[in-house]
Length: 321
Ligand SMILES: Nc1nc2c(ncn2[C@@H]2O[C@H](COP(=O)(O)OP(=O)(O)OP(=O)(O)O)[C@@H](O)[C@H]2O)c(=O)[nH]1
Ligand SMILES: [Mg+2]
Image (tube, rainbow, N blue to C red; front, side, top):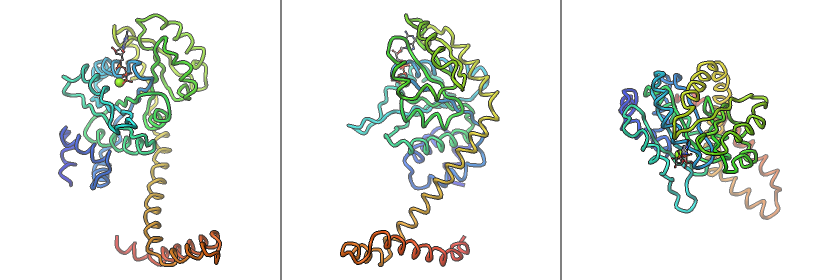
């Protein structure tokens, strides 16, 4: 067993941090780490918090963590930071603000990862990071992602529950509908209930999405004053416990997509490398340029040649394993 895996299974934070970086950057041994911890996963529940910048996600998570601990969860938090297209660096404001709430809380694990703008990439590393945390014994994993858009939709596909935040007087309503965010939530929360306009927004949301097919729960709270926090925590906990069977079904779908992607990636790498080493590939390109063969004919010839090679090699591959 890899040393880092021993560390993860013991819940060692440094091993955990290192492993998350390895997974996030797809460094050398990342696949081996996942393989070795895989059988120790499957316990953790995941919740995604999303909503416009400044709506109070980090503040609310900070408050809810206290309630969740009371329910007996061991909690990890992952903040997915959008990466600045100019500097390429993650915005760390999140980490700092959230740490302001719970930095002293040594039993809560907290980590930021960059979204890098590559949507499929985020879900892949996020799923594996969840597995690592799960194997380390964290049974409630909270993901904060900023904004309203493709990234949120992607995160909502991975987590068990998606919670969407709104705040009064920010024009979120229109943005939200545009971004399709009104379809992804299991719970919608009007945060900042202590400021004016919260009730109006709450009623508007009820009209707008309360009656949609998913019949999401709509709640109101203030991460600042603490009003409504207990009710939010209880609703989340109840949904997590009630929907275990739904989660299993969702997981099956995700695993199918993951496996298909992995097989396609392996095949793509193999075939690209075979193509590069195939002399007739380069010959055919010349022939296409000189109009001796058309591109369709060339592609057909190459493909059947490659498939023949693969079939001839296949028994050898099996023997090697
Ligand atoms: N009045 C009021 N202010 C709040 C409440 N919750 C959060 N805030 C304030 O709103 C601001 C943003 O809060 P954050 O928790 O950082 O919001 P966020 O959604 O995590 O922000 P990003 O991570 O930047 O997207 C801070 O100044 C908070 O103090 C609330 O319930 N009422
Ligand atoms: Mg935040």
